[in-house]
Every structure is written in C-alpha cells, then in structure tokens.
Length: 140
Length: 387
Image (cartoon, rainbow over all chains, first blue to last red):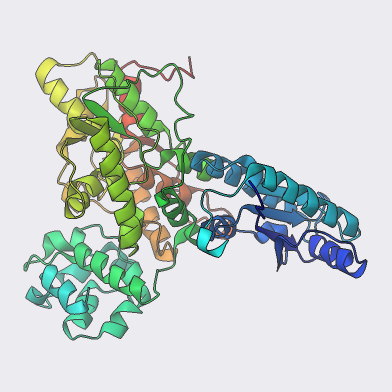
C-alpha cells in the first residue's frame, strides 16, 4: 500500500492518557499526525457506539487509552473499558474487521514518551494492515 | 414521502377517533402521554411538526394490538413505520437503546465492503450442506451472543436448536456466511435506505444460492421477509418458521418426542403472532411432547402482551413496567419455564430480571427459553457441546 496514511481516532481519558498526550506535546516529542484525539472523562465511559461510529466514518483504527489498572481516577472505570473492549473485539471480528483495528492501551500521565511510542507503533501496524474496508475514499 | 402519502397508504383517514387503539395499547396503560389516537389525529390534522418531533412516535411497540381492535382497519404499525421514516428525514431517530449500537451494527453490515465471519459458532456437530433446497436464515444471533452475554442470554441457542431440529428431520440446510441482518430494526427506526441495502443484498445472495425454501427461527426476520421484503425486492422462495415446519411434520408422520416433565407457558411474540397470525404451530408441537403441561397466560394468542420494546428504540421505564407485568403473568400460571420464539423477547425478559437494589421491584425470576432450544432437547438431540 503505497503512500497509505492511516487515520486513527484516539479516545483518551482526562486523568492519565490525555495528560500523557499533553506531556508529549510540552516535551516536544514527535509522533505521527495520523491521530485525532478525543478527550473523555474516563475510559469507562467509552460507549461501543463511539467505536462503531468511528469505523462507520471510515477511520482505519481506534485507540482507547486510559489509566493503568488500579490507577483509575474513578477506581474501576478502566476495568469496564477492558470488558467492553473484549465485547467489541468479538463484534468487530464477526463483522470481518481485523483485531488490530481496535487497540486498548494503558498510559499514565507521566508517560508522554510512552504515548508517542504507542502512536508510532500503531501507525506502523496499521500501515502494514492497509486501509479499513469501510474507508470512504472521497474523504481519505 | 409526505405525511399525506403516509395517511393515504395506511388508510389512517378512516379513523373514527373511537380510541380503541389507546384503550388496547400496552404502552398507553403505563404511559399516559402516549396515545395512538392522538398521533393519528395529529397526522389527519396535518400537524407534521408535532408528529415527527414527538418523543412518543418512537414509543410505539408496533405490536399490532391496536390494529386488531380498530373498527376502521387502520394499519397503525405501518403508519408508525412510515411516519418514522418521515421523521428520520427530519433528523429524528428516536432514543435508541444501547446508544444505537445495534442499529450501527446493521448499518455497518450493510456496507458492501464487509466480509463477515459469522459462522464461527458452527461446529462439526451440525450438518449443513453447500447445496440444498432449504436455507436456514440465522439472523443477528452471532452479534447478539457477545452483546447480551452478560445478562445471561445465549442468543445463538435458537439457531442451534433449529439446526438440531432440522438435522433430526434429515434436513441439511444451506447457511450463508455473507447473509446480513434482515434490516428489521433499521426499517422500524426509519432508516429505509439502510433497510433497502440489506434487503437487496440478502435477496441477491439467496437467489444465487438457488434454494426453494427459507426456514427462520427468529420471528422478526420471518416477518420482515414475508411482509416487508416483497415491497422492495423479490424473493422467490417458500418461507417457513421452524415451528410451522415441525408441526406439519408431526401431523404427517408423528415424531419421536422424549418425555419432559415440566409445566410451561408460551409467550406469543408480536411478530409471529399478531403480525403473521401464527399462534397454533408452536403450541401444537409443545402439546405433542409427552409429560409436558402447557398452561396459558390469561392474555394469550391475539391478546398476548408485547415484551415491552421493539427495534431497540425508546426502551424506558414503561418498557420495564410492561415486561414486569408480563413476567408476573407468566409466573402466576405456575409454569416453570416461559417459552417464546423470538430471540428479542428473551433478551428483553432477561433484562428485566437483572435489575438490582432499589430498581428491583417485584420478583420476576422465571426460566425463559427459546422454543427451538426447548423442542430440540425434547427431540432428544442434545447440543454436541454439552455431551
């Protein structure tokens, strides 16, 4: 796939992963611009519909990021996110989408470098995988 | 489609304003703000804005209880279906349950680029054929299975049970991997374009499969194929519900049914009952099972109460109240098992049982089983996974 630039939407939690993205920015760490970040209060509030809508809109990958297990600002929101992700993976699998198109990652507020690494790695992975079958070429 | 066309097509202009619809409506009983008569009235007065933006437009269960009572033969559910399509063009989609995830899955499925992996639940225990006269239409069960697992519903059981029944009758059906949702939920929430895409796809692959008969275990798929598909696509096949197929066999050759010592009651799903008038075949088979006692709820057959939600839209407190009402009715018969032949009725009933704490309300626990699953076990064909 020549010149394919994947489009990623990342749902990051307010307390850890969004702060990590912020830290990556203030520390001037470079990472690919393929990602659109949406801040949510907690990874536990990411409804399956957010992910499905992202695929409907033609995104190639969806990244869900929250606090490490045990560190959730709301105690157990990230555990919910983990359960929901497992459920969503099965739905997406049945729909015929590759498992890699949905990624769940725990990134703490101190891990600015980790955030940048995650994005770099994910962009590489999606470049190998190719575009989503649901991608709308007109907006690509 | 204009409001005038909706009124003309559904013969709503025959309305006498007698209010029998509101009197027989299970939603109106709990939610005084909802009145079928008022919605028709608004349509007749041309109050399009009031109608399409009414929250209540999506509260209708489309259960057909009102239409059966209507002295003027107004097709109220069709009126709702078409008005919702009109509302959808004006940006109203109702308050879809689960944030619309299930409708989104149907829409994603409608994309031609999607290559599903929907048959992974099939194991060697089931005999299916690459070419056959009969096709078994699975429906959305492979998606419901993970989605409703946490409320204790095994959504694939109706499909598995039906396959076991078919196999025991010596029928090896075709099952298509690229079969898509029948579009029922999209149609009843106003997304006609999405429905049409799904219908065209299904009609196309069924034509290519060259089958003569399609068997359903899901009451909604069956209704959609029988009543809604002919308006958009042509399906040149005989359509049959698994209960019709089996009851016809019992009449002809009799069946070797094992003894099941249980007291059960049967809940008529709206789609199979009032929509299609199939009341007796599922009961005939249940009655043929030796040792089993079939007791009826006080409201049965065409008077049956809906399970409280349809097309996964506007599932609210009133839906819950209707469910509790029905479950209490089932319990009052003294039955051990509530049998239904619609996978969604089962989902909605089980959902009403999981409420905890303050929301718990009366004790509505009763075993709920799908008709096909129950009958398959009485036929002595066990699920190979349980062996």
